[in-house]
Length: 185
Image (cartoon, rainbow, N blue to C red; front, side, top):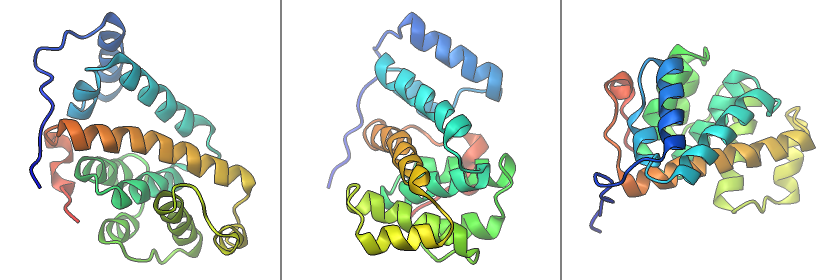
């Protein structure tokens, strides 16, 4: 299978995309390469950043649980960029124990039962395209989650699917910041 990279070099960024990139640089100290490639379409970049920020603020998940969702989706979607980036974010910004990010990166069970249930349910949701079985939902609820969390998993899937699919098509170079957590399935 050959990989075709979209040529975004000649795309003129919209004023709105430039504003999002400027805001990102102020918040993070740099603009991740993924954002630069997403900026080739203002709707994609705007939708992603809005949904990402909303998920962070309103999902009802802790920062650790949010990373579990993001890494689980990215693992199933085989997104090397997001696996590296969210491993870094988990390790350095949201206090995810390294053994949790390592388990997610290796496709192994997480020793924390509740986080493992969240990862398993998220993967099932991605793999079944949002059609989990009644047993899958019951196991998720038994771990301490609710209907609200099912909806939050859907929101997290939407956020990561945008970035995963964008990365599959634009192949952003992995930023030096994330290089220490480079990943390959």
